[in-house]
Length: 161
Image (cartoon, rainbow, N blue to C red; front, side, top):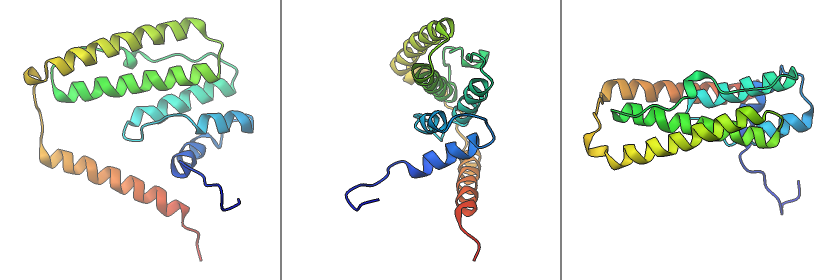
């Protein structure tokens, strides 16, 4: 490319592309899927995207799993999960806007999105009453796993000399 241009989001596009290599989709569909707004801190986002792409490649309609039904949060951990669910619903709606065809699931997702926003607002208003189940040891272990996973993904990119 000319020096006047640069590519953004290369790493995230590459991670998504690796998840789609085995699916028989058009290159334009794969490119569109690679542009999906995914939070890599949320494990379910890649799963949601992959499931959608797999069904798209088979010509089937995609929908949200029951795990995407938002529930009121009684702890900060549940609140974090609620935010992740909202993120997945947003991703699903983004995908449906680029690959239309399932009006019923879109309406269901819009309803779940509204409910998740309502519960997030309620959770934010009551943060002083949410339970804090925080253990520094388990948090550190979780972060170490994330770093190791990112490092292993980067090692796959280093060419052998």
